[in-house]
Each structure stands twice: as C-alpha cells, then as structure tokens.
Length: 508
Image (cartoon, rainbow, N blue to C red):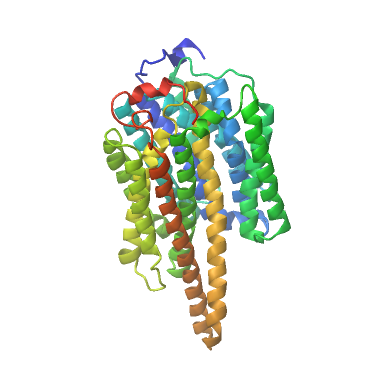
C-alpha cells in the first residue's frame, strides 16, 4: 500500500474516528443482511417460484459461504492489507446484492446469496482487524469497540424493521438493493479516509491445505446443523456431515501445528483469554439466535403482529444494547478486568431470558416481553463490547485478520447451532404437548387453542435451554478470561493496555 495510505507503526492515525464511521457502516450492512432477507423471504419465494423444500437455500447459501470462508477471509486481510480487503469485500458485496435484487429465478437468487457470503467473509474480519490495529490507546479502543459492539448486536433487530418496511411498502427486491448505497458510501469513505498502520502485513505464503480443510470442515459443520433442523438429527446425511466436519477440522488442527506459515496460528486460539472469549461468544450466540427466532414467531403467529410492528417491538433490545455497549462497557472497560463485565453481562441477559420462560398466549408485551428485551440487550451489550476488544488485543499485528475472523466464526457457527438446536427442542416439546392435550379438545376453536398453547410451550422449553447456555457462557468467562495470570493477561484496562497490541502472544 502506498505511503499515503498508511501510518508509521505506533503513531495513532489522525483520521481514525472518521474511519470508524465507515467501518461501522459496513458492519451494519453485513449484520442487517442476516435478518432483513428473512422478512422478505415469503414474497421472494412466491415471485421466483421457489419450492418450500428449496427456500431454505436463500438463507443457507449465505451462511455456508460466510461461515466456511471466514478464516480464509481473515488471512487474505492479513496478506493483502486490511484496507484493500475491506474495499474489495464491500464492492463485491454491493455487486452480489444487485444480482440478488435483480434475480429472476431461484438459482440466480441462491448464487447471489452465496456471493454475498463470499465477500462478507472477506469484509467482516477486515473491518474488525482495522479497528484492532487503528485504535491502540486503551480508552479510545474502549469507545471504538463500544460503538462497533452496539452495531454488531443491534443491527439484526434493525434488519427486522427495515425488512418489514421495505417489503410492505416497496418490494422484497429492495431488501437487496438497500445494501448498495451502504456499500458504496463505506467503500469510498474507506478508500479516502482509512490509513492502515505500516508493518502489519503477513506476507507468508498462503497455507492452501489449511484453507481447504478449514473451509470443508466449517461448511460441513454449518450445513450439518442446517440439515438437522429440516431433516432431523438421525438423518444419514446429517450424521455424515458431522462426521466429515470432525475429520476435516481435526486434520486442520494437525496441519496448522506442523506447517511453517499456518492459516490459523494456534497461538491465536490457545491463548487462555482469547480461547475463553471465542468459546463464550459462540455459546451466547446459540442462546441469542434461537430466542430472536422464537420471539419473532411468538409476536407474529401468536400475537398477530405485522412484520413492521414486530421489528419495532425489538427496539427496546437495541436500546439496551446501545446503553450496555457504549455506556456501561465503554466506561468500565478501562477500569475493571473484562471478565467482571462479561460474566455479569451474560447473567443479566440470562435473567431477561428467564422472564421469557413465563410466556403464555395471553402474556402482555409490556409486562413480560419488554422488560426481558431490555435485560437481554443490556446484558449482551455489556458482554459483547469487551469481548470484541479482548479477542483482538495482544495479537501480533500480522495475525489481527485471523483473530478477527475467529470472532466472526464463533458467532456464525453459534448462530447455526442455535437455530437448529433450539428449533429441534421447541418442535419436540410442541409435538409432545399437542399429543397429550388434543384429545380433550372437542371443537375446532379448542383444537386451534391447543396448537397455539403447544407452540408457546415449545418456545419456553427451548428458552430454558438458552438460559442454561448464557449461564454456561458466564462460567467460561469467569474461569478462563483474565484468570490465573496476575498482571500478565490483557485486562483491557489499566496502564499499558495499548502497548499490548504489538506484543507477541505466548501460547498457553
């Protein structure tokens, strides 16, 4: 990269706050895209003549490409330069979105979604690693990651609102076209504003076996959970995918331990702090994704909310995330160890989830859903923000891309597991409830009531599981993060935290 596009190592970039605006905009676009298309799916399916059996590919094609290529995307950012990977990712994402909006067949739509996933896998790690290398002062880093964390957490709920508005008042195609202005503004801004610090490239030759094995392993894992949701856990293809995933990922770990220039240097994940962050984030996302889905079903199917009204119903969660991330997390991150923010944050979110286990058909939004959403948002915002920062703090600059990719990978895999696992628990509990109670329902209205009660019973059963997941995430954080190494771990606080960005990580 030219001298005009980089800054000397250790010298803060004067444009870093302006750069944050464009990085945050790109992150918002990627997070929006995960939910905005879900709202538009029924209309798109009808227009393009996609069968019920194939409609899942609108979501699955994106998830497989995005989840499977994240580590590769992170390595590309380290190799080419984060700014270049970021701009190319944005440009490609805009082109793929235009293709999706103009789709005339189901196959064209699936291809566009897969391409969005490919360029998203390049864009997302580059965005997070740019923040990691540009904001090195502890207090500034706290503010920057507070804003980024709030967008990463709340963007999905904004997607529900925007998806509902665009689908209801314009056309489902606008849920794709809306990405183009986001991407163009973010790419132009990044090109002219971002100055990447010098000396952060990793020019080692690309680890091709690592790329192939990690991609096959992650795609098999994500697709296995997607298949489990639609075809059951005992399905032979589902089981084969899980076995293949285990074999590929084990081979990947063995390969990474032996090659000179690994795709994922094991020092990045074997560090106690980062390993704890990746694991706890993935588990917390399992809980969050499933609950998003059940709350959407509950509000639309049981309470009869329109897509737009459902989107607005999620606003308290966004507000909670904003407060947790930009106020609580940012203010306390430089004063207390990250585990004392993340652990309580996950427990506050678990208490919000606990409220949702009390849901009934007649539950009011104001007394049950609203307080639970506020607690969920507050807890997750407080926990996510230090997690995002700590996951990239202390890595060598040349590893910032893959460390960032691991954050995204844990979220993506957690989302796939959460959707499949919690859906299976809910469906099983619903079937069991209806089977036990349908005999007493003699009229059609009574039968419909039993079916709705069965659905709510299924949701609450799955939400109990989500509560357990959040408590487990809190236990992992308190056990592993900033623990057992007085004065040696990245505390994301105190003096000298900013110096750690350039300190090599010692594997534990």
